[in-house]
Image (cartoon, rainbow, N blue to C red; front, side):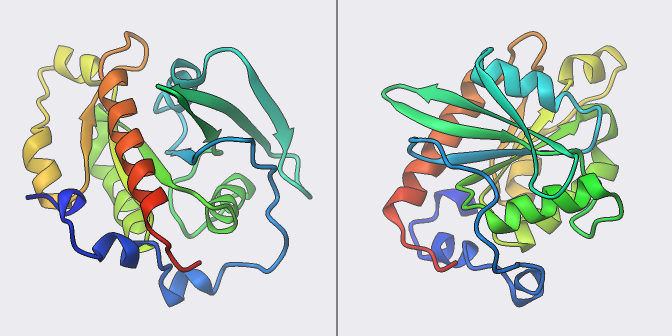
Length: 208
């Protein structure tokens, strides 16, 4: 049984940010206005992993683009429909690490730490999986519910590359979805997993 299926209170613990990450949390009001939705999903990943394509596949064409307060970095927000529920989706700026170097990475980190995020979808390129997993570990360490979306799997398969998603899911203890945002492969499975996580989040009372 994977960690994400465990009925114990480990999910409540996962929502408690570690002392290390709490060091970065500021006390300012949340920078983005939360829509009338049942949860918030953040798309996170390095540049050029197909994150924006996935965002539009999840939300459609009605989106809001605004600058993060005090910066010129744009944040894109939309709404994803899951059955009768609506979830806010935030496309965060590209980031390589939770320890930022660029202004975009700093905005992405601050957004994650200062917003109430129900699910983080870490979007990675299947062709460069190894160098992208460290950020997955950082997100998990920070206490987020993480879904690993391995995008561009079709391109990886054309190069003869194979990804054992079941083995990876067992090793990481988080859901792993093989997908191609451009063709729609894996979108349905990703939505189902996000919905499951949001429902679990609503049933718990994590400490922030």
